[in-house]
Every structure is written in C-alpha cells, then in structure tokens.
Image 1 (tube, rainbow, N blue to C red):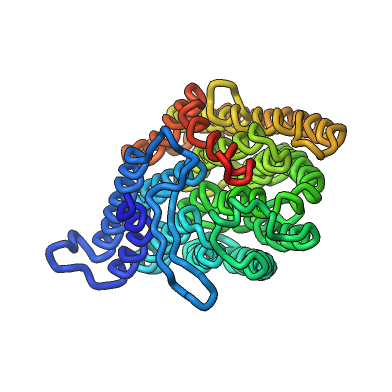
Image 2: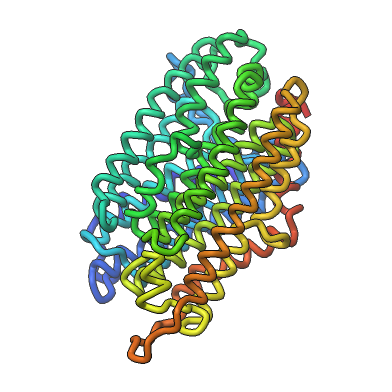
Length: 517
C-alpha cells in the first residue's frame, strides 16, 4: 500500500520525463506524435489502475485512519518531511483525479488539441496530474504548498499554447490570480508551522489549534483562506475562471473544473478546519455569506448568458455555473458540522464528474459546429441536437439535469447535505444568519434549474435545421469510451450515496473532533 501510493504520486512525473525522450523505434507506430499520445494514455491508465488498487486495498472499516503512509525526513532543519497518506477524505479525490486524467489522455489520443507538438502537451498533462495527486496525498504543510503550486505552470502552458481565442490574456490572468493568492497562503502556512513547531498536518489536526493563540488562528485562517479561495474559486475572487475555461482546450477545461478547483476546498477541510478551529469560527459566517453570494451571482450570470441575443458562450456559461456549485461546497464547510462538511466533500466529487462530462460535451459541440456561441447554436445552425445527434443531445440533457441537482443523480446529495448543515450550524455560530444563507442557497437552486433548462431548450430543441445543413456526427466510439464512466458514476453516486459517505463521514467526524476517534 505504501508503494502503491508513492507510485501513484510519482508515476506521472516519471512518465512526463519519458514523454520528452525520443520514442523507441518499435513503439513509434505511424508517427512520433501518435507514439507520445499513446504514451500518455498508457501512463495515466497505469496510474488509474494503481489508484483503484489503492482503493480496493484501503481498510474501509477504518476510513478515519491515515493509511498507506510514508514518512521520511526531507529538510531536518525545518522538520519538513516527505509524509504521504490517504484517508476517507482524500481517497475519493485521488481516484477522481486519476480517472479524469486517463479519460482526458484517451480523448486526446483520438482528438489531439490544435497547437504545438503533442510531446509537450502530454508531458504537461502528466505533470499536472502528478501535482494534483500529490496535493491530495501529502501530509506536510510545505509539501502541500509545493504540490499546490506545481499545477499552475502546466495549466498556464496548456491554456497559452493549446487554447483557443484569447488564450494569452486568459493564461496570464489565471497565473497572476493564483500566484498572488498562493503567496499569501504561504505566509499563513509558515506562521502556523513555525508557531506550532511542526509542519505535520496530522499532528496539527490532532492538536486542534490548542498550541496556537486565538489571534494567531484568525490571522492564519485569513491568509491561508485567501489562497484557497482564489483556487476554489470563491466570489469575488473568481474572475480568472470564466476566461480560463473559455480559452482552455477541452481537456484543460475538464481537468480545471474536475480536479483543480477541488484543491482549494480540500485545503479548507484538511488544513483550516482542524488546525485553526477558533479562527474558522470567526470567519465562518463571512465565508458562508461569500458562498451564497457566489451561488446567486453564478446563476444570474448564467441566466444572462443563456438569454437570446446575449451572444453567450456555452463554455463560459458552464464555467460560471462552477462558481455557483462551489458556493454550495463552501457553504457546507462554513457550517463546521459533520453534515455540512460531508455534503461539501460529496458535492466536490459530484461536480468533478458532472462538470467534467459537460465540458467534454461542450467541446464536442464546438468541434462539430465550429462555435460554442449559444445564439449561433440555437439560430443559424439550427442545433436541435435531439433530431440531428440524439445521443449527443441526450447526454447534454443528462449532464444538465444532473448539474441542477435532480434527485437520484450525484448533484443532489452534496447540495442538499450542505444546506442541511447550514440549517443547523455548529455551536457558537449565528443560527439566524445561517438560516438566511440557507434560504438564499435554496433560491439559488431554482436559478440553477432555470438557466440549465433554458440551455437544454435552446441547444437540444433549437430551430429546425435548414434542408441543406450538413449532417452532424453523433457520439463516436472514442467519445463514448471517455464519457460513459462519468455518466455511470453520476448515476451510481446518486442512487448509492452511502459508498462515498461511508468513506468520508468517519474521517470528518474525527477531523472535527480534533483527531480524537
């Protein structure tokens, strides 16, 4: 188990180095480009198998215990250690990352993004996967920061080199926002580690802030929270996200929405909640207020983009929807209750599955029509996907109803539990304030349903295509292979939420209890 976790984290880095080397003559296939794309599928496939083996070997009777741990001294002067481990909180995110990276590599093998040589693309994709996996597996504050930062450079280049229109400004906006947030976060992490005398996240969680003064906890939560909020992204620190999603290649958008946004919310659960509980109590009402503002703002922005004549981009609309959905995650965390935090973790996984699928679908629609402009799709081209490409239209409608939180699908449970947590927040938090936030969040669910149904009506039931309109290709084999796992897991998580909640709940209970079983 120790080897499996270490290999899962380090394997993509080794694969990235190998991708930059010339392919052996016998493995080149039809061209070097095909060989390196096949290499990406192979490496991400092996990492996915390792992650699944890790999940099968995980002791499900003790999900609150750190398992598959490695603890090696790295920088003795600062007591920084190479400390790895997984529990019921991090394991689902680890598997989700490995799955989405494999599906993106598989999709790219058949549909490489337009841009420079695939060699750099595959290497960056693998470095991105390694950084994300490490973020969910490391148990040292300094290693967490390094892993957190590792993903920024590959994502910047994926947007800047393989992105679409406006890619350079979008890439710069992404890197500047996230780097500035990270600088503030680093100061907070250093403050906690140096004052507590350790950077070990397990020891800090067990201490539960008892070694840190209340004022220091407030400063730490503010500093660390700003960096995490930018990555989440929390309104009003979200403005880099729509541009990045709109300009990014399809697989870049899938990974950005599916796993990179989860790094911020994971940091709140893994670091802020257990390490500085008093500071979190001070900021929880404000975090909840920003969360529900994001829910309403994201939904209203989507409604504005979806209305006829707005020239709204479908990729941009899905990006704004992420601001709203991550608002529910932050609301659950701000409640500081097991119910709310479990809902936040469930909503994290559900959002990764559903929004990953939606970005795949929007990318396919853009490839077929040459645009993602809603007015163009619903007007001149006569989208009417139900009639022209019924499987593609059906999958888009499925992704939309899953995203709006239809009961029986994954999107329902996380948002419901987050609102239940806010309805009865932790002791010491203002219940009237959180009841108000819950009411606003409920209103946000109605707005979410409104804009998603408008999108389905306009794109899937758009104007009848002209008689001379070219035929539209329906879902192809490689697309079916890349999208089916996400749709199937969305249904499975919706019908059998206990699979995920059974992992997260014991770990959350122990985390909020200060590391005590």
